[in-house]
Length: 502
Image (cartoon, rainbow, N blue to C red; front, top):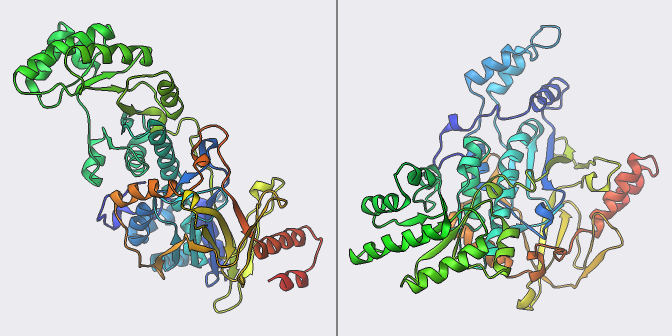
């Protein structure tokens, strides 16, 4: 969900949640758990698109959402109308009164939009009263996961384009209106240079691009006349779509009208190819344009592009300058969900010691990590590969000065971090007791941040096939605690052993 800048309360719908968040909140309240404090952690389990990294996105939407969040009278009336299976009210009226006064006075820490991140790492942490923390789960996952997925896809496409312009043209194929707006912003943050989405341009300042479609050509008696009329109507915006009938004949018509534009002091900006053998057609179109005196006319390509196809076209010597990417970008077509999770990782009574909690699974990748989690990124002095490892750690555990990180999915994979290695902690305070304390750096700074970071990693993480695996691991003390909690849950050790580890 994307909220426009300076959005007001009614654009932050508190009922954007799953019913079980509210039934759990009700049960917490009724059983005396409302005063409990909890820590929740948002992460994802696998890097998207079988890639070597992800690009975090969605923090701006989270800020706009949480900053204005409350239950309104119509929300409460609707909840009061819900019935249980025996036709009695699902929620007591006293609980409805409780929600009317509920403050989302939680602490939220998160990595910055545009941060290069990896599977298993904490991306966002919510600490505070358990009921607001629980209610936030669905919305936070909704706001972060899709945005992160599309930003990552956009970055991969931009990398494949090797510095050439990439425009997001996917609104008509997006998953609903809100999905289209979210995708346009996320794609822009991930590196796209503009969008066809006019509303996204208005809301977020994204450059908008577009000329005409096949229907413009088909509405005329001939392709040539369509180009003539368009050039007369918009002589300063002429990129002609040339594949309605016969692509290379269309290029000839574009050249003819381009000469008329030139004679009138205007310019043929380029042509767009939307079907057929894009490598063959672009090579021939480039030759025709150059020979006709239009070496600066760009060749734009569309037609279900993604990073794999762009890479293939470049390998074939395609003469394409600009890429218009639609469906496969805005839908994340080869992986339509990030697979993010939001797990309870610690709980306590106010002022008491945290009790670390864990979720088990028959699948190792689904076993949660306990604690008040933070992620530390270590840096070497060698600027050719500045970032060397990420360490997931628990802020309640004394770390000492020497670090060993252990792969959360394979305990035999370990890395020693020399004492004195420089680092940065990725999660920064966003809200403290419900008050915004973070200044968002802006969309342009975020776009720049993505590629500045990528330059600091081993270049292999950017490979589309068999990417390099950047070292990410649990701090040794956290790994030991997690292991003991697993063994305790399975009845293999007692509480005393866990207290020794902590």
